[in-house]
Length: 60
Image: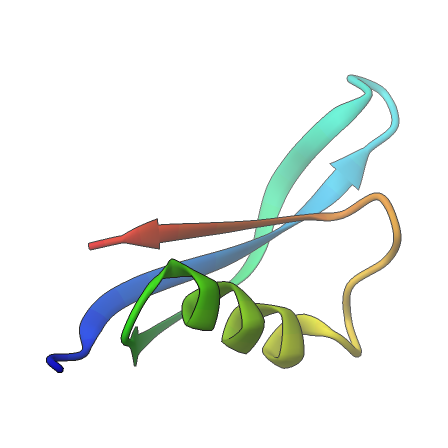
């Protein structure tokens, strides 16, 4: 099966607007499906992510 290209973005929580704010870091990587992509992104951002931060995973 071909691997697809995904981009994951870690966004810090902004308490002033009560939603995700500025982009902190992004990575681009290959995965076979969105589930594998989410797991890779979650593992990658695990140490720097706080509970209210958002991870976005997109197929590119």
